Length: 198
Image (cartoon, rainbow, N blue to C red; front, side, top):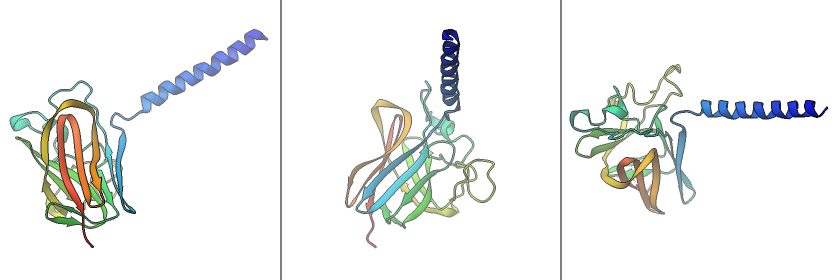
């Protein structure tokens, strides 16, 4: 009787351990993340894939290879991993001289050497996977500039600390606007935005 109970508990814990190992094995290499802020009654949300350095150095590379590792063969970087990075805003936003109406958009970054980054806010739809049917992009493969809503230069700086997992966040938010920041490795790129008058 005692041995039978021990066997049941042993089996129970073995199943729990295998389930935990299986759950860890199923964790995506670049899990989805969300950056969100609320200005007044309005939400601004960025949904994006969060790749991890995993020991890689010089992730953005140098010279002619600049940006190649993160964007692959795509013309621009998806500002994350996997599904296209998505911006959802319930209020019109001004980036530079361009007003972006409330709605849902894809975010891309045109990476050029010498810290010359351009944020692209695009009307391209996003697919859930590369094999999903229908219109839209998977990541930034197939990106074309004809659906650009805004192209705005970013401020790029070097950080003393290295961000291991790619992170998008909102900073210095007020009722008037704030700053959107992209951080990875020792690089931080920022862009200011304002709530646009309707």
